[in-house]
View (cartoon, rainbow, N blue to C red):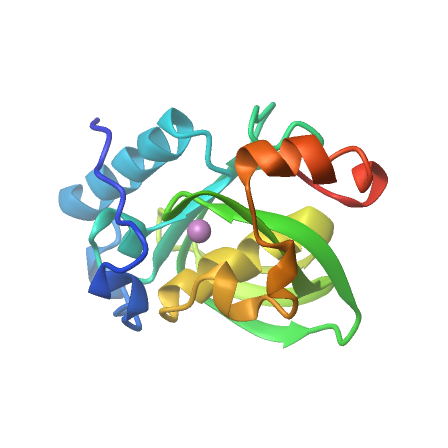
Length: 184
Ligand code: NI
């Protein structure tokens, strides 16, 4: 396993629509190693998710996990989930506003409106199809990661750029005031 270099905002791969992983290649050593390396990289940088374009691979692949994350201390736990060729098939009109950050947009947080609930399907790391109804913080993280696979970052989804804040100022001026409603 290896910790991979994370692409930062401005790298063109973050703005490309990623290519689907061919179904016959999911269990190949190369893809399985990439998945393991993405998990290790996510853990190393305390991310709640990471998408393949964030490690220079234009592939429809992302990993998600929340377990006592120091960057998101209030976030509910999410089991390790590998999303291959994910598709959001339905989204609720009801939105929630929550703070998001991104390993590719280092040191910044901003408020992003996201659908409260969604339906999605994807393949797991064994290539098995998964269908799920997801809500709350898990739904937010899926929307964030699927956006990466479409060449989008959370900044594109912000409706009020005045909430964009450095992490230190977020902790100083925003965290307490919004305690109950935020994930981070
Ligand atoms: Ni991100």
